[in-house]
Length: 213
Image (cartoon, rainbow, N blue to C red; front, side, top):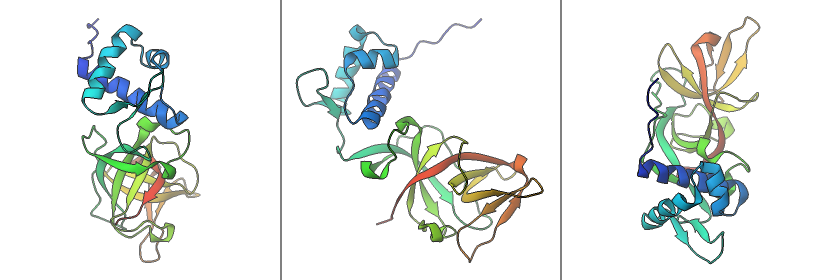
């Protein structure tokens, strides 16, 4: 059996920050040290060093005395979400390879656009290339906030990975009677693709739209 890898100091800081931000987003208030310890599995005694480092990095700030005196350092009316590049919104090729690995780039998203009680850690931002979704008010250059995962409801706008092309497109999915899947645009100027269900992986669905300035 291989040895368990210990997390570095910076990785622990990231763990504390992710929990802090997710808790704040879900509850509209900051966690206290007991809640941070329970949520991260880090003892209260060790938490202080990570919190001090996050304050030094200007990721969180001390605004008041008391157990909930810490606040996110960014604009309080928004949340920083990772930006993972572009996604195609067109009929055919070229599709865009979507990389959902870690990204150092973040975009401030107004809090009022985001769904309540969502998991902050599963939200990310993509920029749309193409005009195949204009009938649902998504145009070329707009930003979409996505919630990762393959769960979605009928008529959700989803990021569809086409495995045989190793590329993704923004569309609506509709099953056919023969077991295939329609990959549908929302524009009369674009065409529906019919794909084998085995060729499709849903990588997330749209939860908010930000208009390009």
